[in-house]
Length: 138
Image (cartoon, rainbow, N blue to C red):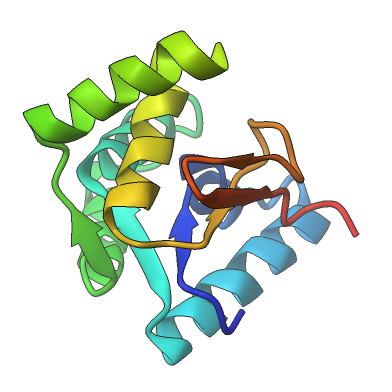
């Protein structure tokens, strides 16, 4: 991935998903490449969502989640601010996106990303100048 890319929560979750080995390999490969190329961007929202799912649904230990946070902190980080939330409200109204997806998209836009890697949104669509790509579909 030579393009500046925003990483949605599902990539971090699939990186832990030993029950979905194909998606796990894909997620780990993408995360490594984005880290190596310094093109990956995360947000505080993505980290919060990751922690919640990792602890509640995946049953991972707090110690493991902390160790993963140490790794993920090394990516560029977008702080979700009131400005981003306002932009998300606009996207929510104009694009009919779920509000939390709108925050992800607004964060990607604020970071100057050209790609949003997400399984949860409409792949191929361009919104707010950001192209949505489902990394798990060939």
